[in-house]
Length: 121
Image 1: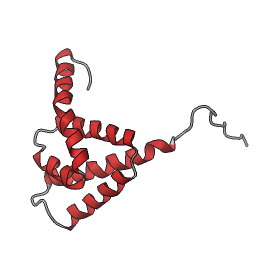
Image 2 (image 1 turned 45 degrees about the vertical axis):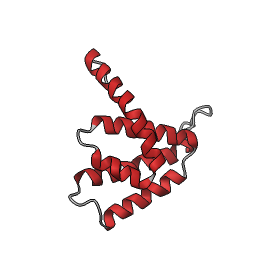
Image 3 (image 1 turned 180 degrees about the vertical axis):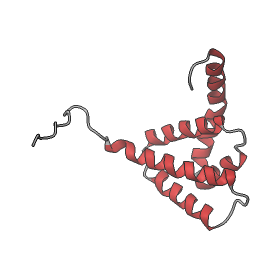
Image 4 (image 1 turned 90 degrees about the vertical axis):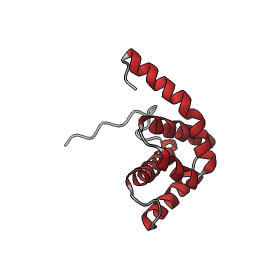
């Protein structure tokens, strides 16, 4: 029986520092999906998703919060109707919503430039 090859020491398989950001992205994606497609903005499902998003934001570092705001700006720029998503985001964390909104105009401009040149977003 052959022994499995060892993983390289200099390159970890899954850096632990990425997990809080990834969990926050998943929580906010579910919240935005629900807010965009739900007929009513309230309900227990929305409250559960907001609570999950709030828990993940509290576990983020300042750098991860900045990356999450950038990711949310790209997500908002790619959506046609983002008013419900913006409202849901503001109910979770107003500071994060303001950061994402501030980045939104610049993100839309960059996406338009990439579309004009044919580069992948």
